[in-house]
Each structure stands twice: as C-alpha cells, then as structure tokens.
Length: 115
Length: 116
Image 1 (tube, rainbow over the protein chains, first blue to last red):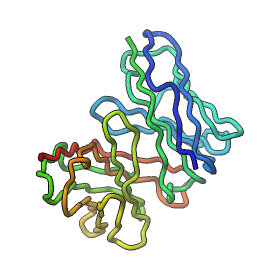
Image 2: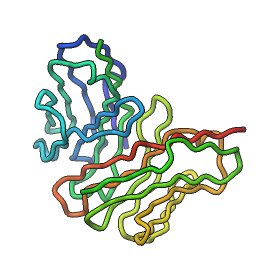
Image 3: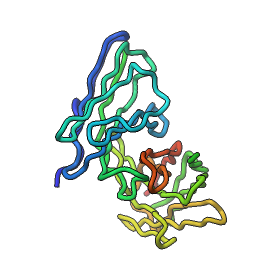
Image 4: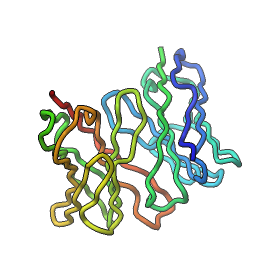
C-alpha cells in the first residue's frame, strides 16, 4: 500500500502571495488532516476533511482553506501569505473519524518559506 | 480539553544505554495516546499507540511505553539506544474515541541525541 505523499517538498513564496499544497492520502483512508509545524515546535492542527467535508478546524484564520476530492486527496490553500506562515506543513490520513484509533499516517511535509 | 507536556526538551544518552522520554497528559476522557518520531527532513512516523487496551504498549524498533492513569503519564522507553534513534520524539493525545473529530494534540517534542 502507498503512504501519504505531499507536493511540492519545498516552496519559497513572497509575502502577500497565495500558495496551494497538495496531499494524496494513503490507500483506503477517507480522512485527511493538515498540520502546521513551525521551527522548534510540535505540529498544530489546521483542519480536517472527512468524505469531502471539513469537519473540524483549529485556531487558524480563514485565509487558510482546503478541499478534499472524491479520491480523498486534499489541498491546503493559504492566501495573503505572512512571514509567520513559514513552516513545515504536514498532511496526515486515517480511516474514519472519532479519536483516531488507528493512528494517522503522515506525509513527509512541504517546507514553505515566505520571504 | 486534551494536552500533553513533554518534560524534557533534550535528552542525551550513550549508545547501548537506556532511553527514557517523559510525557504527562491531560484529558477529560479516557485518552488515546501516541508517540511519533521525526527524523531530520522527514515526516512523522508512528512508534506506538495506546487505546485503552494493555497499559504496556510495545512499538517498533524496540520502543515501549507504559500508560499510568494515576500519574497521568505515558513515558517512552528503550532498553538500549542505537545511533539511528537520534531524532525528535513527540508525545501526542487525540480527541476521544467516538468524537466526530480526530485531532492530534502534540507536545513540544524531545530531541534525543545518541553519543557513540
């Protein structure tokens, strides 16, 4: 079975620009979550998609948005980039919702640098 | 609300000696707890998980963790460290089983250094 794949691996953007990050979930998984990991910190929950619907959101502004597609792949969009958005963005997938009893499979992340 | 506290930001051990990474949790419910490892420039790999079955949980690469409800702890141990164990380790608690959301709440991480 394939794992979670993310693209691109690295990205440099200018403040004020928009960015789209992509994630392919592990085969058989229908739930995708996105996390932001700032340097030296643990990952912070951005939002989660279950069967193409956003079913939960962390403490992130509306300029962070997402989509999940019928094949359960997902996109994270960030508008009006700020310097503090520089981070590693991690995508994770699992089967179903409700406490993640199966654990999440994480991708290797996209390193976003905003200059 | 769920949260975890990793008590050490850095741990250094010599190769072949035991590893202990400490984690305390706070949860309003019976928690689901995890340890993840992150090697440089890599994603997160699940080491082990506790979901209210046996309190001593065995994971990959010789790691194990013991759930102690009375101490609200979930410390990670390994009898003998290898050089390849050098990485960042995260203790994680999730939203409770049966909730509509499965958010993960990460600690700040413990950087493990292994000396030859």
